[in-house]
Length: 431
Image 1 (cartoon, rainbow, N blue to C red):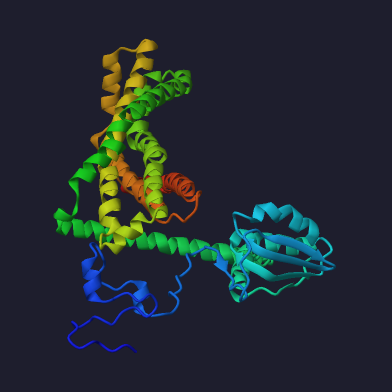
Image 2: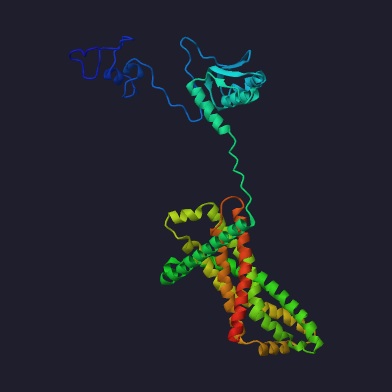
């Protein structure tokens, strides 16, 4: 070890033993732009540290002492042994791909002791050569880095394991599985109803949690944009009811009572029901598709992670909008149907004033209020079914479509059931 000369500044040595030039802080300070740390040759003899290989890059096997690595790969057939040598990389594997596969046929062993470098493209060539030779042909002689790359490539090339073949369920087992599935669906629906009810109560206690802008936007989507379709269908339904009712009533000379019959039918039953069917097909499916897309994209999960309740942000505005818009749609359906019926009655020779008097005499205010009350319940149920279907959507490309289908089918079935319940209830109450 070289000793520091007396009087020399601290940090300076006697010189470089290999080149005989002075070293130390004084020399480095004299060179403009030189780094503050000593260069590599000043830090003592020894090889530079190995650099970590890049992920997915080629690995190079250590070359034997005194032997220069070859740049191009080699393929040699020695009896029943196929020898691969050189560097098998993405740049060189294509040159020997066909010769290697040709020479691999009939080989009993593949020797990789001569390989100096291998990446995933070269590993693909080795795997293809082994398959061409036979499934049981051993691959031997690879160095540790080459063997590691080859093993990882083999693991990625293996086909996924086939799922075990399921045994066909018997009738009893199938019925049991169906019952369990229905019970789970009922439990989830009950849970959603409980959460929605709690959200309504909390929103009534804390109105600031409700976003009025979202409610107004959904009111426009549910109500205003559906006015044209509701008016068109209402007029057509009124025309159809008037024609179909006039045929049997004329046989008894009672066609003057057609306005009463059509008015009662529209206000109590057909107006709310048909408007609810439009809402289920147009809005319930839209709610399910919107929330289903958010669920598939994990946006709902992101809201929960951020501490935002999806029931308050996504479900509550839609429920309120559908509940408020549905009576308006039902009333518009009733008025449009009465207009269509009036046109038919006037076309058959009845004056307009007579038609208005018959409607006024046959329809009471309770009929209108009962129909509007049913319409509000229909809107709440349809919106709830659509939102639940969207939030319960699975994953995959079919999830959103399945959610929309479930919302429409479930909404229409719920409408029929609820309408039957209201019919029995109104009958028992004498309405």
